[in-house]
Length: 162
Image 1 (cartoon, one colour):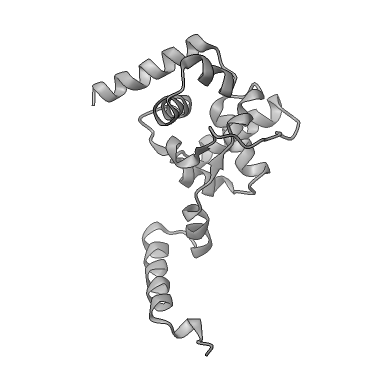
Image 2 (tube, rainbow, N blue to C red):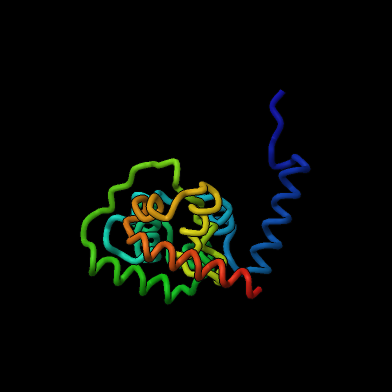
């Protein structure tokens, strides 16, 4: 027996909730669905010489086809900041970013807490979720080991002062 989904109570409830979200946040249903998708960021991106945010924005635009406004919502950053990061990334790195999957890839959502910088969020995630040594984190995201230690200590300090 084939039911028409548009008459299903669950569908009608989703439609009602989607309408509320559209109204409350002034975004389209398509944008809401786009935001609801968990995006995994490959750690292999970080060997391009770009800043952490620049490389993530470049990846989201060029590989995932996300708009500036969607990226701004997903990362909890301003649309202007996203545009600026992409503009700088394009000037510094003209090539397509090559990505490979890794067990250390992370969910984009970890960088949405503006209490921490993008790099602090990534380092904190790799250290606490994967229990990686500073040297391994440095290797994974192509940064100096001393930088990783400093960034992690700064993030821990922010947690202590909360």
